[in-house]
Length: 261
Image 1: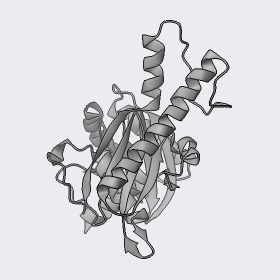
Image 2: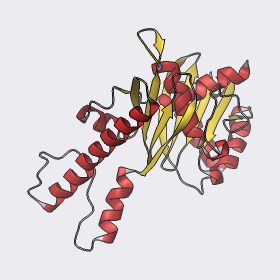
Image 3: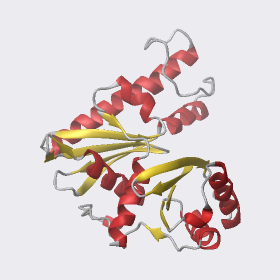
Image 4: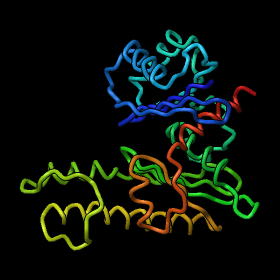
């Protein structure tokens, strides 16, 4: 079995693979003060809950955008699972050329998503195609993958939850609201109006950026989405053709296989 860990700013996503099959996946809150033992105990309990044997893990792969959690996670993997993880960074063999002007600046999760998206969604009618990958996380990222499987670049926007929090914090008379699809675009209450602006404003943002990125890619391109809000946003726009909930975990698995040789 392979243990895959995606350490993001909001959640730590954990996946366990048997070959290419994802057996279980879980989400933990990202607490930057979490210790190696705290993470280890959590994961051991999750393995027991899933009916999995900790001793059955043959390897660990991880990507982290939270530097304060990288070292504790490395220690946890060695102490509780007996393996030093493969850390996806500039030295790992991803199989995807990075055309960014400063490749080291690209977040590991964005490369991992690109690898998985091109592997799983990068063909149409038997031919390679360009892709736009949208990840609805703490920040919403849009990544452009060429039809040759190259990471070209992308767009970074505040996530919809960040936008909702900023609206509450900066406007004294506006309440804090949950991000959800409202009953109508035209709000008849303050809360309804705010939900409409957040939800449909974000739908419009996604449509506009994806269309412009496809235009710059200069070839027929698909669009795949992942992340917490993907399943809520995607049905509202034809710009997104597929939602791949576990895209990042599959990318980690693919990169693990490529590095294992």
